[in-house]
Image 1: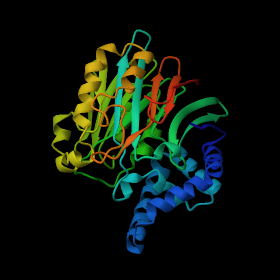
Image 2 (image 1 turned 180 degrees about the horizontal axis):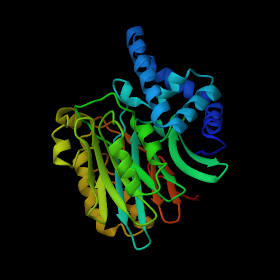
Image 3 (image 1 turned 120 degrees about the vertical axis):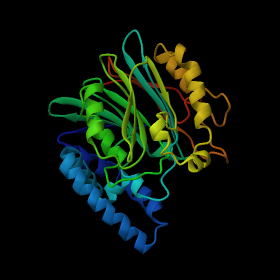
Length: 337
């Protein structure tokens, strides 16, 4: 996986990102928007304009980076908003994932297999953001996007999973939410930010920090934020665990889109007692029980996604273990931040 160091102000970092990946951004946007009619495109761009105004107001540094990516890539800024706002597009991209958070003897460790359509592994890079004050955060992101998972200078990190809920709101997309979280010092601060933000759709987050705190957080446009904290191990896939948020679930769409979700969660929970260090967590992420619909997913007619990257993050020493593609096939690269 490419490792890209971006330096300077948020706008400057965005400009470097856009300039480096201009071709890939254009290709990805073209493929995503080609199926929309003129009327649908007009509506999508109107919604993107509303979202950008909210980002500029609620998260101005994130907004500055988006403007930088647009200028660096020679794109309209609303194109870059759409690149990080899959919730605005129908149908949404399939990104079923398996994640875990664990308290170890050394500190908190969070991990995820990020699943997407075949070929989506080629769109990903690790972006390391450096300001005048030094390292800020690292995130795995698609070219032109803001990021899927990440770890910051304070040792706070997050992974997350798609939830299939019926409710929607005119909030801010989850990639922007994730970047807001990466500005937090610890799990407590991220939970408070989660409660303060207008979430556009369903999502489950797993948090960890350098003080060995972990949390599982589910958000719904209708029911707000549900927090689970009283455990030393959390696992999540693509169905809601909170009873109230589960009532908001589109069960038919969930069964069609992520039929392996329940089984993947069972496997993660069964492995939980063994996840005492990064090596054991990586064994879990390689697990192919019930393949192709496994924690380490392979594409199938039943569920046409596969693991595009796998990551384990040691919060206490800011170490990433990152594998491009299915970790059962490829090796993990150790990266110290």
